[in-house]
Length: 336
Image 1: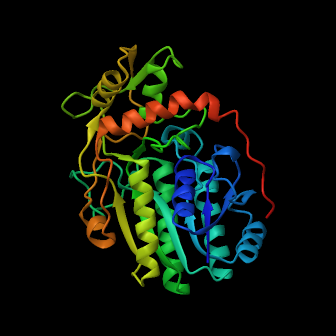
Image 2: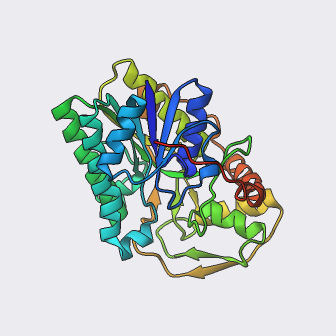
C-alpha cells in the first residue's frame, strides 16, 4: 500500500509526509512546486513534479507506486486572490481535483482524504458552525472547495471510493523539531505575517478591517496547530481502513481569537513591539468562523495536543528563525 500526497512539498503536505513516514507508511508526493519546496519533502520520499490535473501523469504515478490512498492537499488558498482570479482558482482547485478523482477511480484507489476549508460556510449566522449547517461561500476559493466536496461525494457513491472531507479552520504553527513549516514567499496567513514582522522581515503589518461585529472590531478565527491537523488526517486514514463510512468533518478547536488577540500574543511571545497599521476590509473575509469540533472527536477519536495559541506562535517563531538556513537546502528530485 502506498499513499499519494498531493501538495506534499507544501506547508501542510510536508508535515503530513513526515508523519506518514514516521508511521512506517510508503509515500509518494505529487507537487508542481508553485508554492512548495523540494527540500521540504522527507528524505527518501519520491517527489514527482507535475499537476494533479495531468491525468496521464497521475495515472502513471498511481500504477507505478501501487497507490491505494490519496491525501489531496494541492490547491490555491488565498481568499483575496480568488476574488481577483476566480477562473484560476476554479481551474486549479476544482477542475484539477475533478481530474485527480477520475484518476483515482480509474486507478483503483480505495480511499481519498480531501483538504477542504471552513470558507465553504461563508459568514455563518451561528457560532460555532457545525458540519450540517448551511454552506454559503463568500469567495471563489470557498466555492471551488465546495464544488470539489460535491464531486467527491458523487464519485464516492457511484464508484465505491471511500473518503473523508476535512474542513480546515485557520492552520498555523510548525513542526516542533523544526524540520518543516510555513515557507511560502509572500504568504498571507496572519500568524506567518505577524512573526515575520516581529523578526524584522517586514517593516510592519496591516490589520484588514476594524469595524466587524466582534468585541474588538477585527475578524475572529479558530486557529489549529498544523501538527494537530496532520493527526486528524492520520486518524481519518485509520478510520477509513477500518471500514468507516464517508464523512465530512470540521478541523478546529472550537474557540476563536481575534486578529488583535493574535498580534498581542505574537508580541508577547517574541518580546517585540512591532508596527501595526490599519486598513479597509478585504473582500471575502467573514467576521467570525469558529468550529464545532464534537463530530471529529467522536468519529475519529481525534485528540488535539497543541490547543494553545502561545504554543502555536512559539513554534511559528522558531521556524521563521530557521527558515533562511532551510530555504537554501535543496533535495534531488526523484523519478516518477
